[in-house]
Each structure stands twice: as C-alpha cells, then as structure tokens.
Amino acid sequence: MTDHALLSVRGVSKRYGRHIGCADVSFGLYPGEVMGIVGESGSGKSTLLNCMAGHLTPDAGEVFFDTAVDGPRDTLRMSEPERRMLSRTDWAFVHQHARDGLRMGVSAGGNVGERLMAVGARNYGVIRDSAEDWLERVEIDKSRIDDRPTAFSGGMQQRLQIARNLVTGPRLVFMDEPTGGLDVSVQARLLDLLRSLVRDMGLSAVVVTHDLAVVRLLANRLMVMKSGQVVESGLTDQVLDDPQHAYTQLLVSSILQV
Image 1 (cartoon, rainbow, N blue to C red):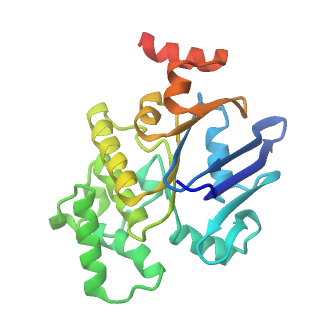
Image 2: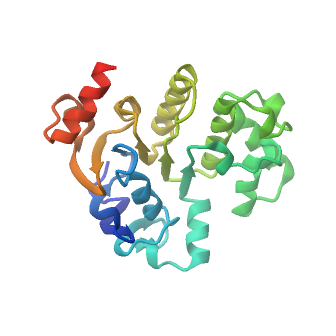
C-alpha cells in the first residue's frame, strides 16, 4: 500500500428534496485496499456509492481518481466519453442484481468479450480464449461459453457479471450488495471467490452491504452510515469488535442475537 490515495472522496453530498442521501462524506482509498460501507436501508450507502461511481451527480463534493496517464483527476468533472472509458478500463461496477450488469440476450462468452472489444480488442480467437479463461476463474465451466445468462442460476449470473467486470484488469471495483438475494451457501462460495480475486489481482474496492459478515471477510476498513452521515469508521475488526457509536453497537448486537 502506498501513501498516495487511489480514490479521494471529498465532501460528497446528495439530497433528494428534504431527504438527505449523503452528507459531506470524505475518505481516501489506497491501492490494494477494500473499504466496506455498512448501514441499514436508507442509510445513504448506495447513494454514496453511486455518486462515487458516476451514476448519480452529487450536489457538492469531489471524487478524485489517480488515473494511470494523467494522475489524480476529479471524475465528476470529466467529459462523458472520458468517464465512460474509465468505467470500461480502470473501474468496474458489480450490481446487486446480476441482470443489471449483464446483457441477458448475449452469450456468456459474448458478455465477457464485449468489455474487451470496448477497449479495442478485435481478434476473435484471443477474445474467446480470454472469455474461456475468465469463465474458469469464476468457476463456470467453459463448455457454457455459448449459453445465455438466462440459463444460469443466480449465483452463476453473479459470477459471470464479475468475470465481465474484471476481464479488463480494473484497478478499482465498486460493489453494491454483491451477495444480496443469494442463498447462504451460494453467498459463502461467492465471498470466497471475491476474496481470492481481490487478493490475487491486488484490487482496490468499495463494498456496500448491510451484511456485516461480508465486510468482515472482504474489507480492511469500514465506514458505518446512518441517515446519510458517517457515524463511525476505522479498521474493520476494530469497529466490529469494539464499536464506539450507539448505532454501530446496535448493528453489531442485532447480528449477534440472530
């Protein structure tokens, strides 16, 4: 990990009329680090994630990313083509519902290959080989390369979405409830896969979830949000094992009582 932040979020705020989505949130994310953001529904965690990823325009704040060519740049002030290219190369976004991140009418191989083609790949053999390789990396048999995602289970669709996102070797991955809606056994397998990919690729990631077990396994650091504000942050184990804020204590104790 270096002293130079890969992502710097500064004073990001978003309102929906009288409702506060997120308020004056700031933090730095460093290379190879995973930041978890937790809170109940309506806490503002998904609003913050979508502001960072460029899916929502915040009312105030800056989101600086250390680009490979030009160094730190405020992504909120990039042109649309620049931001689109960034989202295909150095950034990736894993949706809670795999259908939101896949083209359901295109084959599994086509879903993975499409992102390669978006960054200039044109050799069909190379694209197909890369797709096969990534299907195997996410534990999908390469014999399924020509099957459409509609023929896959929910867990397989989520793994295919991960392959589609990671094939271009991004440096930063945004994850919105990546295990949400999956059976417990499928969740555990997916979490193990994500943890190994993050480690092996040296990825930085921001993971939004309501599931404290997810951040315990994946995140180095943790932010707890309530009513659009960060109420506690720190090293993941520290926050979960010795929560200081009453709201964090409530979250942790509710899990322990289940």
